[in-house]
Length: 298
Image (cartoon, rainbow, N blue to C red; front, side):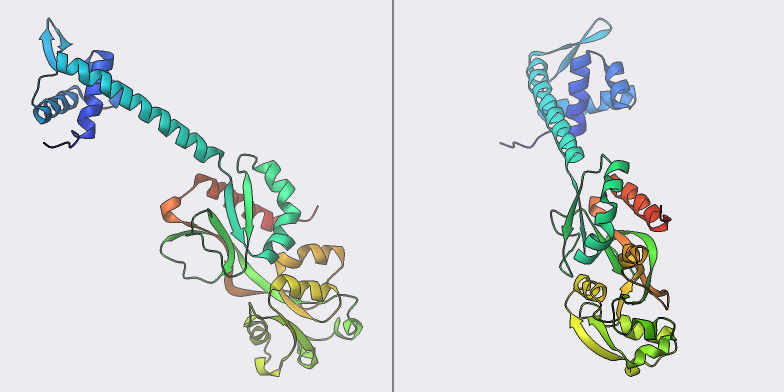
């Protein structure tokens, strides 16, 4: 014996009609026509092989079979409504988990976290740091804030926030500071430059933009992550290269200087989230991040 359920639309039409005791009111609640509800009721009766309603005057009366199905369907649909409401509330209450590199988190997001939480209190942002191992496709991560170059993955909704701008930075504590701070960019050819293995093309890309042969640059101390590279620059260990947003606080405080300014790369700072899991909160976050990147210092 088949245990297949009848079509869901037919069950919905029946449940609404039985609950409201009116085809017209059921049609209004379901946002369909009177005829559409009547057809669904007929489909249901044909599927079950029993009559669910009999005419009584100008109205309808439930048969014994209809009464049994009304009680069962009312309980089932009420339970479904309750569970769906719980799931919706649970989703709304869940934090928005944003992945980003440790350097971006420590040097740009954390100094702005108080303002972000005040401006977007319903976001309930949770931050997940990592370097090269974060993927918004994985469970538990809602979006990724990343410096990357187009083209963008086809399965991602991408909010472009700002073009990436990079430039050399050094500390006034650096031994070569006085000699270099007014020198042309070509003067860096004689320096042992701090660099990071996570972004090996940063110095060559900058050099080509300034008419310098990348091979003329000399690499000094290397670091695995950008965060450590910039800490080394702040400590006065040499000249590093960095995205502008990650050193803006150090520049304002005078811990670092950028004598040669910053120049655009093909990359963008962008917010990525999977299209299959589009979250309305991502648009709000992207708008806030974009405005914050344009924000002038207080």
